Image 1 (tube, rainbow, N blue to C red):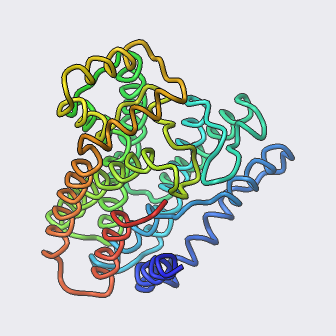
Image 2 (cartoon, one colour; image 1 turned 180 degrees about the vertical axis):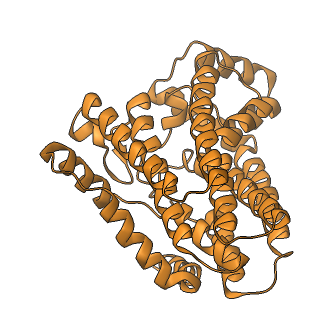
Length: 331
C-alpha cells in the first residue's frame, strides 16, 4: 500500500509542472479519435479505456516547458506522438499474437487481426495528419524517420528471435530502434516546439535516448517476475524467442554444461512452460537481473547528467522525477 501511495505521489510530482497542459492533451487526444463507423468507434472506445501511462506526451510537454514554454505545436506534437505509439502497439499485438495489453484484452483479442490492423492504420494516419498540421518540416522529418525506425526495429527483433541471435550489441540495436528512438523523438520535438536552440535540441534528444534504453531494459526485467502487476503474462518474451538482457548475461556467465543445455533449448525453440520457468530461474541465479539493473541505472544516470545541464525549473524537476519513475515503476 505504501509503495502504491509513493508511486502516485511521484506521478503527481511529474505532472504538476504541466498539469493544465496535460489536461488539454488528454482532451485533444480523445477528440482526435472519432468515427461514424460503428465498429471503428467501438475499437477506439476500447483503446481509450485501456489507455496507458502517457509517458511520451509528458516527455514532450515537460521538455518544451524546460526549454521555454508549451505552445499549441507542443500539444499537437504530444497528441500525434501518442497516436503513433498507440498504432505501433496495435500492430505489435497482431504480430506477436498477444491477447492482453495493460491488463485488459488486446484489440485483436476482442475483434480480430483484420480489424486490428485497419484500426492501427487509421490511428497512424490520424497521427500523420496531426504532424502535418504543425507546418514544421523538421518535425515532419523526425516523425517520418521515426516510423521507419520503429518498423525496422520490429523486423530486427523478429529476425533476432527467429535466428536465435544471442548478442548484447544486437539487443541494444533493437532497443535503440524500438524504444530509444521514440523517446528521443518526443524530447527532440518538444524542444523544437518551444523554439529551443539547436544545441538545446541536441541535448534533449540525447536525454530522451538514454531514457529510452532505461525504459526498455526495465520492461524486459518485468518479464522475469510472476508476481509483478505488469498487465501481461510473464515469460512472454522468451515464449516468443526474444532473449533479453538478463538471460543474455546469464548465458555468458553460467556453467558451460548448463549453458549448452539452455542454448539448445533456445535454438530448438523448445519453450514449454517448464522450460520457460527453467530459463527464468537460470537468468536469476547467474546475476542476469542484477546486471540488467546496473545497465539500466547507467542509462538513467546518463539521462540525469544531461538534465543537470538545464537551468533549474519545475519542469526540470518533473523530468528528473519522470526518469526516476521509469526506473522504479512496478508495471
